[in-house]
Length: 192
Ligand SMILES: C[S@@+](CC[C@H](N)C(=O)[O-])C[C@H]1O[C@@H](n2cnc3c(N)ncnc32)[C@H](O)[C@@H]1O
Image (cartoon, protein in one colour):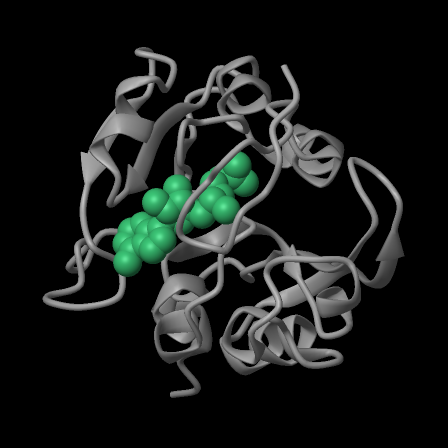
């Protein structure tokens, strides 16, 4: 099915095929891993995660979108931009986020990745306004921004791309796959 993108926040008719970036890096997710699909909408990225044997939670504020998501995923309806943060101290083995940006809580989002966990993130970047929506600066990443955010939040960047794609439609995209280093056991750090 082919869908066309409307402004961020309303998944209009967007391509329902999973993101090729998610498909590319889903192999890092272990069977049984707890995965969060952040602002996942109707769940176009669930299939490659569920096929890995992951236990996936999909969160979005739109109950209609969630209702059409694969029922094997746990669904959480929450506003991710205002009110209390929906996750408390909860952390995930993998966090996937596509076609969504809310800068004021970007570091909170990246902080959801557990030690030894993975972040797979792809969204629109500056320059996308030439091709359509999203076009507003608050929805578009600045050059290198996702890379810098990952490093700032203690993640190690495995892969980063920033540029033009022509599929599923012409767009400026930024995407990162990053790992949080495993926690160092306290006793191994003792010096005395
Ligand atoms: C462009 S869609 C992307 C959906 C999915 N990640 C994908 O790539 O197909 C953006 C999603 O962000 C969700 N969203 C926008 N603002 C939100 C908010 N304040 N809280 C939770 N979800 C929000 C929308 O409901 C929508 O499903």
